Structures are given as C-alpha cells and as structure tokens.
Image (cartoon, rainbow, N blue to C red; front, side, top):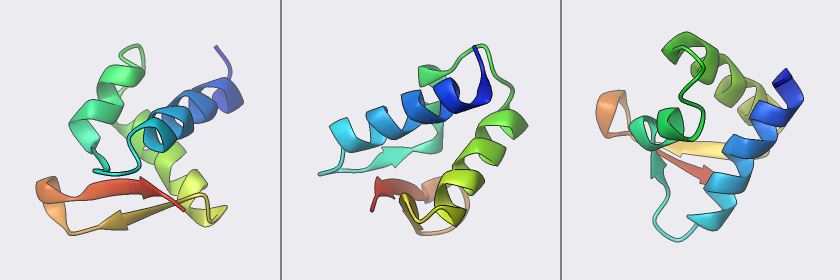
Length: 66
C-alpha cells in the first residue's frame, strides 16, 4: 500500500474512535505491516495537516481526530 492509503487507514481508525481516542499501540495494529517509526511519521504528517491532535506525553498519549 502507498503512504496516502496508510494515512487514510490511520485517520479512519481515529475518526471511528473519536470519542475515546486511540493509543499508539492501537494505531500500530491498524497498520501491522509498518514499523513503529513509519507509523510515527504518518501521524506526524497528519498532525502537520491539522487532521489529528495528541493529548498527553510518552506511552500514555492518546490520539484524536481534529
């Protein structure tokens, strides 16, 4: 799959779980074929596009759609 498809998969998961947000470990399960750093890069891109936000720090962080 290409980068944009993977970003859309992550964003769809975030929208579907908007009420409670998603932990990074959940997002890794959405795209198990990507490495941790690849998922991080996609989330950073989504954040820079103002599509997602993060609450908290470290492993307790929760991701939400904007």
